[in-house]
Every structure is written in structure tokens, then in C-alpha cells.
Image (cartoon, rainbow, N blue to C red; front, side, top):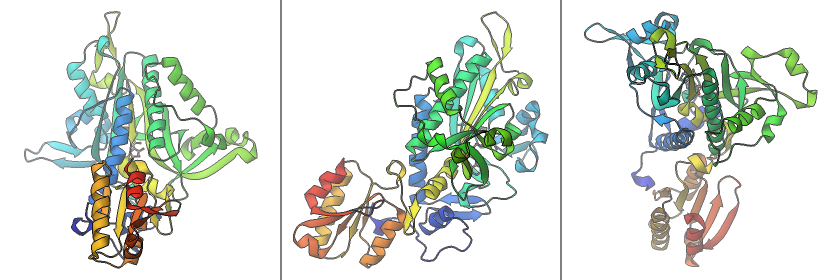
Amino acid sequence: MRLSRYFMPILKENPKEAEIVSHRLMLRTGMIRQQSQGIYSWLPLGKRVLDKVNAIIREEQNRSGAIELLMPTLQSAELWQESGRYDAYGKEMLRIKDRQDRPMLYGPTNEEMITDIFRSSVKSYKDLPLNLYHIQLKFRDEIRPRFGTMRSREFMMKDAYSFDLTLEGAVHSYNKMFAAYLRTFNRLGLRAIPMRADTGPIGGNLSHEFIILADTGESEVFCHKDFVNFDIPGEDTNFDDVAGLKSIFDKWTSVYAATSEMHDEAAFNAIPEGDRLSARGIEVGHIFYFGTKYSEPMGAKVQGPDGKEHAVHMGSYGIGPTRLVPAIIEASHDENGIIWPESVAPFDVVVINMKAGDQACDEACETVYAALSKAGRDVLYDDRDERAGTKFATADLIGVPMQIIVGPRSIASGEVEVKDRKTGARETMTVEAAINRLAG
Ligand code: P5A
């Protein structure tokens, strides 16, 4: 991508309305734009990151055996009347009427709709277990939307829904998502801690929130320090291995961790003082087991091996991609801007032409840009007619992991500088060596 032809509306000043660093940096780099309170457009740079986050979420959901579909944002009120949640959900639900005066709503979550899909076609236990997910926009008319896309009214969610014949089956489905979440957040460069959590309007009594520790987080959390040393399940995790997945769950829930709603002061104080961690955190995921709360009233039943009808045991599992992007920034930035983990960086490499218009610089930049693009890297080429200092500041601000700096003096001897955004380490090498280094 040539920056001169791209759309990246960078702000020179720090936006006043932004209270936390991720919100400030997302606005300054032109990743997002507020359209009305708590409702955002994702501009091209932000969209690239969001897509990469979603691709990792999708890969790990698929790996665990979940199956992707896509449900609509608008739902009929009737479904919610069946489950009893239409009235119970309160003012957070945006209620609308269509031209025939039929009550509709902008979905805040999809338990009812997926239960309706399930009951319309699954009739036998032989078709279980089943886990269906989508990545879709949601709307919750939050009282206090704030911190940009961290807590917005319209936001994206990956929501998965599991169906099992028995409680034991449902617990295994829960453990699959538990392990998939540990892998997902780790690949996003984050250490998420699963904590016992309140279930709120979703329901049930088994639930974990996945929390990233950050001073700017909205949740107050309490846990044992040991979490930093726990192993993340590997790529070769067998998601059909019931005992194996249970041991992952048991390990990660073996030491104390709870959000303030579930906090048990006595249990926390039983931890040796030096091992206690009382901190703030960002909830990036939340998983629930709620049994037959929806399947019973909505008639989602299957025939069991005993020939009888059984309401299915269900769970639901959410991740917030549009919250994860700012959460990653909260965890990874410095005074000059964002430092993207490689896995979600909007570009892998930025090529900085210090003197656009200089023949040797232009040619070297074109060579590097073409070669790295051909090698499959996402390359941003800063070919703008701007001062070198402005270009360096932009590259640091937008946080692309590697920079190739092409200046008239060094290119005269066939050399460029390669800079690592995270460490700041710089190395001078030939154009060819730089290409080889960054192509892989
Ligand atoms: C689980 C999937 C649910 O809604 N139903 C379907 C269950 N859970 S939840 O905890 O309420 O939300 C899941 C995740 O969505 C993100 N999230 C938000 N992100 C941005 N702005 C918001 N206002 C917002 N509300 C929820 C969080 O990451 C949460 O863990």
C-alpha cells in the first residue's frame, strides 16, 4: 500500500475527549471515527487490525470444532418473548418497529435466535454435540459508553453457542471453549486470566470472564500471581480428549481468581501476601454454561438414546473483537505510539523513503516494496512528499513492527537501515539483505 494513495487521517493533536491511551491512539492514527455516541466507523487502518484479530479468533474457534454461520443484527421480538427475556432485558435493548408495526430489536446477543435455528432442524442426540458461532455486530444501549470502542453501544462480538444432550457433554463443550480462548488471547499477544464471574442477564451458574490486567480496566479483579507461569495449550491440543481438556481447565482454575462481584475476601486472604494480586482488568471474553434456560421454554429438544425427548444443555461463549483492539494497545504501546504484536499488525513492514523524488531512494524503495509484497508481506510504503521526521513519527505512531529506512546518504553505498519498532534496535545492511531479512 502506498501511503500517498491510502486513507489514514492522522491527527496532529491529541484528541481532548480521549481519557485513556488506547482511545487516544486509535483516534490519532485514524483507525476509528465516532459517528454518534458509542457508535464508530472502522477506518482502513483499524479495519486491517480488526480483520487480523477476527482471523485468529476464527482459526481457533474452527480448530476447537465450532462451526461458523452468520445471523442477522435485527431480530423479531417474538423470540425474546418466548424465552422471557424481552421484558427482562430492560433499557439496554434497542427496540424498533418495522413498517408493519411489528416489534423488532437490534440484537444484544443471540441465545434465542440460535435456539430457534437449532430446534428447527436438530431432532436427535446423534447430531450432538454441536457448537455454532458467528462474528457479528451487536447493540447495547449502555448507560455509560466510554473509552472509544472499549465500551461502545454498537460493538462486534464473536458469539458461540454449544448444544449437548447431557451436563457432562456440556461441561466438555465449555472446556473446549476455555482452551480455545487461552490459545486465542495468547496468539493476540495477551495474557488473559480466566476468573469466576457473575452471569448477569445471560444466566446460569458456571461462568468465567477472561481478563487482561491493565490499570485502565473497568473491572476490579483479585487473583494469585501464579497465572503468569501457566502453560498455554499447544497447537496440537486434541479437543476430543475429554480428560485432557478437563486437566487444562483444572490447572487454570486451581488457584484463586475472581472479579469483584464474585470476590471471596477470606479465600483471597488465605493466599500468602506476596502472591496476591489485586488489580484492574479488561474483560475481553466471557463464557457461560446455563443448562436448559433457553431450550426448555423454547422447546429445543432432541430424542435421546432412551427414546425420550430431552431439552438440550447449552452454553454461550463471547469474545469482543472491537474491545480487544484497544485492549492490545493498552498492553503494548510507548510514548511514541502503538507497538503492534506481529500477529495483528496492520502492516508487517513500513518502507520509509526519506527523500521522495530522489532517484536512488525512489528506486530502492520500489525494489524493496515490490519484493516484500511479492513475498506475501503486508507492506506500507511511505512515499509521501513529507519531511523525514514526519515519516519517522508516523511509522512509530502506527506501530508497524519493522521499518526499512531508505535515505540518500546510505543508499549511495547500497545500504538501508532496518529498525525494530519494539526494541528500537537499528541495523544497517544492503537492500538485498534487508529484503531477505524481512521476507520470511
Ligand atoms: C456470550 C456470547 C454474552 O453476551 N452471549 C453470547 C454471551 N456475553 S457478554 O459477556 O455479555 O459479552 C461478551 C463479550 O462481548 C464484549 N462486550 C463489549 N465490547 C465492547 N463494548 C461493549 N459495550 C461490550 N459489551 C460486551 C466483551 O468482550 C464481552 O466479554
